[in-house]
Length: 364
Image: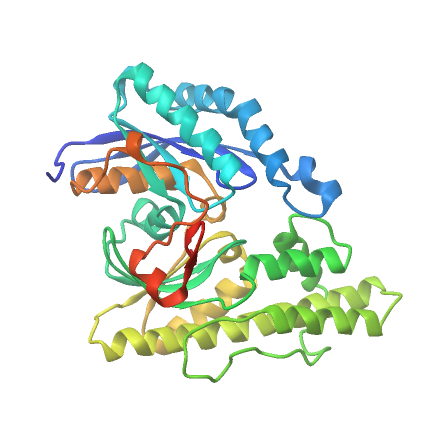
């Protein structure tokens, strides 16, 4: 049954290389307040390997999760006994990290006698605008992160339809690999963005994959290959050349994303959906150049543009707690104790028949 009372939820996020815990309160009228939001990054642990190592990530979660949850509760001023529920990311993500978070949350829920809500990581991103801006569905969403690049119609809580998805690399992965190729270190997205500030976006004629095509999907593998070839042709690279490549790459990315958003918008308008807002979420949504381009696009298309604050674009516990609170308020939360961690978990379950599935489940 729908919940009309205030809800206070502890959220735990361990799907990749950030360990996070947060306490969020949802008022009876649907407004959200972040009481605490603690995130521990693992960049230092993975730096020597040029990317996230799943086993290292899982061990790092295990080492600090207890302390982070204690810190979040202390900051919030909410006792464990006063929580209405505990929430944890059950997927999609790196299975080792997910198992750490879900196992910890299940034990904590049993010890505290609280219900557990298993949250889809993508739903956390999809609903963050409700926490930060009070935005309610329906709206069009661009989800751009290290593992996912999608456009989705967010019709209502728990009612999502994927419009377009990447057919190869996620956008965040393309940023990370570009940074690694150019020796910029990690995290790749901020490193490329920083270098691009001093570069010429017209210096290199990089491709715009999928641009102008009617199907709504994304592709970044060809762009990534073009960046590698441009870098190899200019070796040894100077700082100025690196800056030019980054600026050209970032400009190509923005052109592609805007074009794909235009196709997705056409899709929802053709279906008669009155969506007047575009929400950008995920770690790549923190990119300032991309935000500026999306804002300009929305001005042309008579849309409102919304994106979470930078700290809530990347993985965090607040979005997990909020998604759980929204599901509880709508009477839609399943018993999280019965849910197993899943490396793959599409936000729109029906998409498995469209985008394919395998031993690990439907592609997310």
